[in-house]
Image (cartoon, rainbow, N blue to C red; front, top):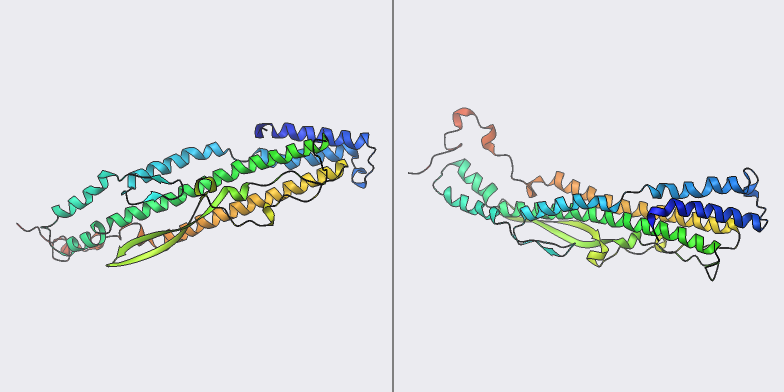
Length: 305
């Protein structure tokens, strides 16, 4: 099987359907307007064409690799990629922030106290949360990548199953020998907990993570869309109608999978916009302080000598 030959398969199906209908003297009202040739010319290729243009799963890999690089840069060694099961070693550069806190021991004033409490102390939490956020975005891309890989496999399977029915390679023409893998290609993982110290209190926040089921070992709950379409028959019209029903069902499966991914990404976006304090330090008051107060107790303060 080869997805790259999908439109060639479609042309073969059109030829086989036309040949089958003519050889068996099929007289169906569907053929009345454009004849057998015209009917299948307008039916077959247009059904397969949208799937021939779906994204190439390989094109997702550079973006996934970029996020992987970002995760390695902000890893503190306490968090792993729960989707890919990849351990990320701590980046030693991040540890220098604790050294900076020691250098500031002799700095006094409100700015000094706030900088330590609002930036240096919670810095490990910020980077951990940013790591998990990046992990979730990476998982969403991997789920999308898996979805298109499965969609390509499934549409190719439909084409081959149709050809087999015309070639009498199917033992029972009332059995449609194709199933869908799209929904099982993306998984639902447990919640990832984001925790950041805010004013001395830990504030846990749960986020859903999704990823490729092959990596996670979990799948979305099965439903009727995952079941093979019912149908079959011996006439060209019956076979192609079953094929059309399968393609329509696959379209709905892909739409559902995309909807699941989009929902999680939207939830992530809402979390980031609604809880920015979990990911970045607040804008310092010093930035808006009047010039006359910059060197006072309310501002930069003084360094003890």
